[in-house]
Length: 274
Length: 249
Image (cartoon, rainbow over all chains, first blue to last red; front, side, top):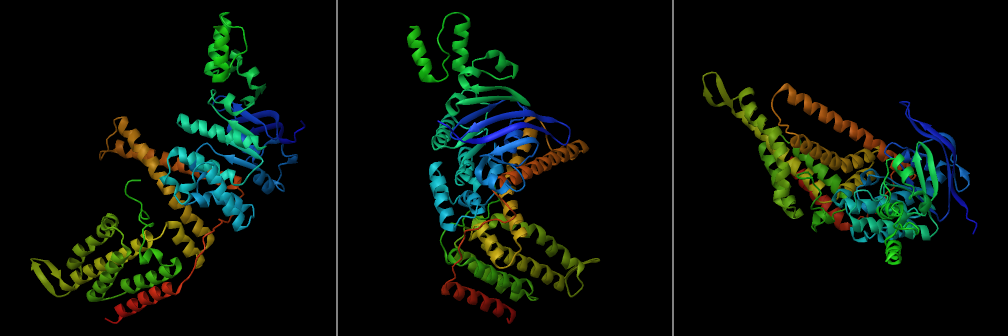
């Protein structure tokens, strides 16, 4: 199936004003309906890269969103196409009430009040916060604020979602809810790029992976990249716990099958071993 | 946040909670002005009684109001103590060169009563509607949009600033720091506060980025509809009549 490209990044480099080189000739692309995990050590340039996808930073090189290059002229359109969820929900929830925050993006898109209201209702319902629409953000729990931050972007119904550590500091249940929310959006055709340190969640929330350390270290299918211990070690990253276990068994010649990344795959592999 | 939450009871039902925001703001503002410009204690007392009556009608819990009342007391009580000694007039009591003057005591009490009445009215305004509703009311009454945004963001982020402050204090305490009146304590507190300000600056950049990413172009959208009913005007005229009455006591 031929899919349109949602994100195309070509030779993107960025240096901060203090001289720190954050990105060095980064190139990759992401098609509509694909989910990509962005991994790298601290200071690898993950957040810097994400900020470029919404035009918040502008480096050397090209960034295209749905075949349109980010420029001063296209900026407003780009921001209606790329929904960005920041790592700290308190950076994202700036309005006095939750429903006003969720309405902020759609209202800036020039939608009518009826459309805005409908989207606010829909987005809050998607993240399970309908009952808290009139709450002030500081009265929400951290998990609720994370979901609220997601709703503020969902309400814009962007074809591209950029998520910076969406599961950080969440309890296990909230993490899984966030994963299913991300996958649900992907099934609807949204292209999603997620920066994360949670290696165990990567196989659940993405199909492809991009390892970044200022420049791209590796890119491709999760199963091919995440079972390379050397690659992960070099970037001070861990392998997912299941993959790590079966890789160790493989290295000790106790297992010869494919490396499982998910619980159901691991159960099947153990059954075969027995 | 432990103490500061003036809109905690903005969701309860009372004639003042139901009062249309713009009319309420104008009426109570005029009443406040009417009270703070009076020159007689009897007028100020009448203003205070009216403020207390409005407080009772608003059904705001007394403990909620009293929590904020310590501030006018802290600022105004020194006047009640100092003015009787500094304002010249009829001596009520004298000891050697020290004399307490009636005019000074009257003036101090006048300031105190006016201050308490005005603060009570301000707390009624803040407590009977969510902060954003009041700010949007002021905006529709002509307050400039940039000022509206500053107030809204300041209110939102003051809670986060306080959370950061609490975290910092716990962090200092966990490392054995005890506040003392020493140069070392002052230096550590100064550095900690400076760090808080730097963090706040970083947060402001992040917030601005989050706003831009959602299409912000300098205007905050508002969906609040304000409906004016005849009962709002009746309440408004009643308060204005009382404000006028105070002037003619």
